[in-house]
Image 1 (cartoon, one colour):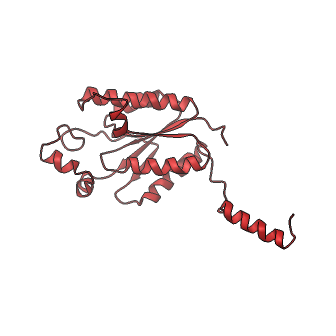
Image 2: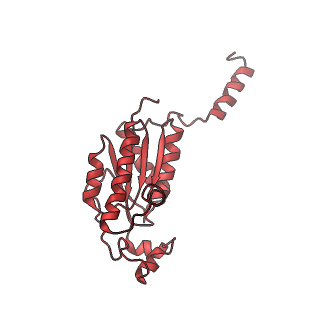
Image 3: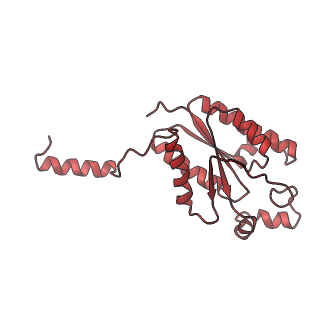
Length: 203
């Protein structure tokens, strides 16, 4: 199944909407299906690839362009790149899209109310208190994608439901091979073969 060429799955959405969580799950599934997969997490990229960049519009754009550039290189080298970054501005996402032959934009949609309620990293509270300036969704804009390939509503959907939606899209587009196990695990297969052998059905 290794003939599949690379492509990029680009997760965009507000902080805490589930981009990285979904990205990691998708990565696991695609790895199991024999694909090369790299996950570029926005926070991780910032500490490595984009060291020294701040959160001004220019710096944000530069950061997203870099992630886009790296993902397009990986995609050209038969790797599935999963990028999880807030990427708030439509124009830069379009630029990144144009670097790719195959680009799957996934919008993790969740209301700001719900995200503030969850606030797993305590960032929204800090932004509201004015401790973090230019926080997307609070005092910096987020431009929702107009026509993403997939939209997942992480407020109402369970994680598995969102994951299934994305995987189904990839299968439908022929980007990812369908699960070929037919529901039978290799252990189960061995057990069945063992039983058939003991019954002399097979050698």
